[in-house]
Length: 293
Ligand code: AMP
Image 1 (tube, rainbow, N blue to C red):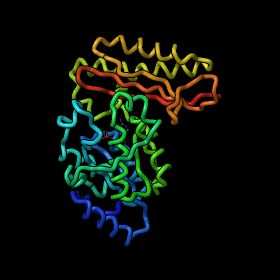
Image 2: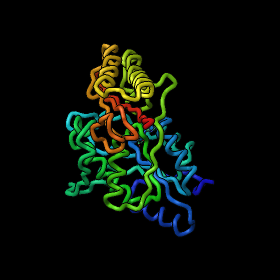
Image 3: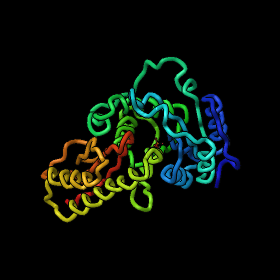
Image 4: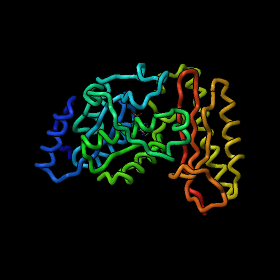
């Protein structure tokens, strides 16, 4: 049952806080939170639906956070479409949509940064210096504003899930992090707001990511003593069949520690994580594989 009949769009922190306070005063249901940067697709909608099924009040935030973009990245041209976002949000069951401006979130230059060490030194943390500080800082601000009981994150950004879980544990934040599976297009491409940047040819060739992950999974599950270097090489070779693909990283690590993986140790899950550029567009994808040990 929806907590609020008509979805409400809220721009100020004070209004959002008072709306959530009012909900809590009148109901004992939980508050579920889905933070996004907008340009919503089925992947985002799946998080909202999950929140709808578990929480009394579903809060969605749409905020393109400048702090998590590096110089020369796509902050300025990040795709935006508020009208469509609100339709998707409403259909997926959001109650409150929080859409703050940059000056609402950062009225003065921010002097406080939340930095999660270790987990952020590899993969996207290595390729995008400062990115996870920006993510951890904004998510921690949003958690303080919304004070959710549960927050829903997609495993498409598996390193982000690991970083947020670590932050919540280290800072004793009273929120349950709910990791959700990656939604894909019918042909396997992981859904992403950035897919709109791809030309037709790039879009076709981008299929090598999910194909490489499928091959990797098959390889791992059929060879209990597989060799990590061999696995990475198999993946790299498949991606190289797409002439437009430029690999940023293709790495196998233990999950969720993101430590280097040795097949002799008792790790139960591994992640094979990819970041591949097609022209100016950088796509990420991953598969998490449970080892039969
Ligand atoms: P973004 O708007 O890209 O920052 O993503 C907001 C949330 O949606 C994050 O928790 C993402 O991991 C999640 N998300 C993005 N793409 C997908 C997808 N294809 N499947 C599931 N969740 C996703």
